[in-house]
Structure formats: structure tokens, C-alpha cells
Image 1 (spheres, rainbow, N blue to C red):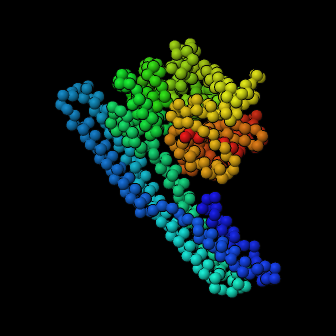
Image 2: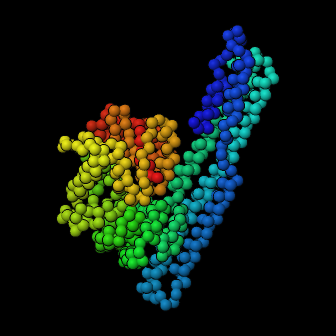
Length: 522
């Protein structure tokens, strides 16, 4: 149980069953006194809101100083571009260098704002935590007074009476501590959501890949795609580790690909493909397909970054269609969101992840995309069923994919792209979902999607948690919808609106409201 649950339980015991003097012959006054004192001690034993406001305020000041340094660095870079370039750089060369340096200065400057907001959020947290801890101390003082009162006052008038001063004071003290705990818990959720949102923007200097300085990482972190930041700090770090693991010749070849890129966005997709686990041959194949379009931002984004807010590509939905392959469908789209080479294979039929790297002759039209997508769904579905040992023989594959198949596909498809091993976690109760919520938020905030199974007790379905912000989770449903739900809806099993007949005529009445398992990256 949580501290909040323990306090509520103690308050219920303090308030008791409403004993009165008419029960004197039926109860033991000494036992009642001891029970009240025990309940008060239980309320006193619960830890108060954790954390040191002074330390948090110090972290806020450090963030503010770092923000100021980024601002100064951006100003220095802009001054360099504006008139301090080497005299040997003249004409078009100087213009090109000035534009590149100005762009870099802007990207570095963009990091100042998130850090300033982080400083503000931490300062507010320090103030709010101080208030919660002061309130908690007031509740503790009332509980201690009530304990002393129960010791010295008349058993009959102060203990057996449901309205006795001792019992009332103790209940009041427990209520004050509960309010303090609720305040601290809400603050923790708010600061966590705020910092997670800022982490992708302010975490640019987390990793400097081999052969590059922190400004290169700042440039990568500043790149934007249809779904927000193109690379998360974790992806930048993973790409750096994978580049470091290459041979010197491999690193040199990758550097040449970056040098040949016609835009920072094209280079960013090369880094993203590297982070997704593609080796030198795959990267060359990927670069050869996207290279002719490297300066076309619209082409790059539409072909390499599935826009999950629209849930479609050239008019064709990402939906699983009429086949019962929700596990493979949600996993395929989640993988495509992280791996641009894989998405390229779906949109064009070309690249290292395509069945035929030379191209399937179908082009990148909507109909060809739908055909490739459904074929990929069914291929992955067969892999999942094989792991379960239950391969469908009917035309609509109604057998589904079970727990073993879900874990296999998570590791086979998402594991490589995230560098993590996925493990199934059953969610048998609201308490289990609440306990797992922190791990889910941490995973998706790092760019690692989390498969979630939902049920109505007799039927099941898999969706994909792909985002987290402000106490909400973003969930992709392979029926062709992406929706935000609150943490409370997830914990309390209230996801029926995502999975009912309003989004799928074939869905069960009331939908599939209860999350009963997730696949968590370790």
C-alpha cells in the first residue's frame, strides 16, 4: 500500500464504528482505548512527503544558470556568423558557412527556453513541497495531542463517545496528513509531466557521439518531425553507442553519408536509422533512396515519419482492417514510428527493410502502401502465432496472438529499435496499474513504446502507448485512431471509449475498458 492508503486506513480506524456509552457492558473500555491509541500511532508512523525543498531549489538555480549559458553561447555563435568568420571564407562559401552557423546558433538558443521553464517548475515544486511538509507537520502535532488526550482523559467521555475530543482531534490530524500527502502526490505528477515534456528539448547535451562535439547533439535534438522531436535524447545516446561499436572504416563511411546529406533533416533520419539498429549496408541502401529527396522536407517527413495524429498515409489508414491482427498491427506502426528505414519500406517498397530492396514496382501510392502494410501485419501475425503454437487456418485469422507471441513481437520489432529487452507485466488490479504507471511514463518519454493489452473479461485487444504528457497517456489503437487518456482512466480501467462501437462497429458493447498487461522495456 502507498502512504496515502495507509493514512486513509488509519483514519478509518480512528473514526471507528461510532461507539457510545450504551455499549459499556458489551465492550472492553481498555481495549477500545488501546485500539484508538494504536490507530493514532499507525497514522503517526506513515512517512511524510519526501524530498528536500532546499535541494530542489538549488537544482532550479543550476538550471537557470545553465539556461543563461546556452543563451550566451547562442549569442556568441550568432556574432561569429555575423562578422567573425575567417577572412579566407569569401563569397558563396562564406554565405553557406554563415547560414549553417546561424542555424546552429538558433538551435542552441532554443535550448535556453526549456531550461528556464525547468527552473521555474523546480522552483514551484520546492515551494509547494514546503507547503505540503508544513501541513503534514501540523497534522502530526494534532495526532500527538490526541494521543496524549486519550492517555489522560476519561475512558467513557473521551474514548467511547464517537464525538469525543480525542477521537475528533485524531481524525482531524489524520485528515490533515492525508491532504498533505494528496498535495505532494499531485505535485509529483505535475513536476514529472513537466520535466518529461522538457527533457526531449533540454537534453541535447546528454550525449556527444564519437567524432562529434556537443553542438552536433544539440543540432540533432533540435530536429522536428510530424510527431515532435525527431530523435529523443535516448535515441541520440543509442546512435552514439552504435556508431562507437562500428569499425573505423564503418565510422568513416557513416561520416561520408552525413557529409553528403542535403539537409540537417536528412542527416537526422540517417542518425535515427542508425539508432534503430541498422548496419552499414542497410544505411547505404537507406541513404541511396532518400538522398535524391534530401532537400525536400515534405517528402522526407511524409515517407519516413508516420503522422499518428492523422492516422493515415495518402488517404490509407494505418488500421488493421478486417483481420484479427491487432498485436502485429500496433507493433508494426510503433516500429515504423522509430525506424525510418522500416517506414520507407512501407511507403515506397524500397530500402533495406523492404522484401525486395530493388523496389517492388508498385511506387508509393496509397493503394500500394495499404497492400504492403497489410502483408506486413499478416507476416508479423504469423510469427506471433507461431510463438504461441496456435496458427490460424481460417481466412480471417481469428485465433489472435497470445502472451508469448506479444512478447516475441515486442522484442523482435521494438527491441532492436530501442536497444531494450521487453518483458510482460500483468496488471491484475488498479493498484498494479498505478504501480506500473511510472515505468510506462519513463519508457514512452524516452521514445520507447509500450504495448498494452485491454479486456472486458472475455475478449481482448492490444494497443500501443506512444506518448506521455501532463498526466495523460497517448494510445495508438490499430483500429485507426490515436487518443489521449488520463492516468486515472488508465489506472481505473476506463478505456472503453477507445474500444467501443463508436470506433469499431464490430467492437463489444462498452468496449474493452481494462488494461490487463503491458510489455515493458527493461
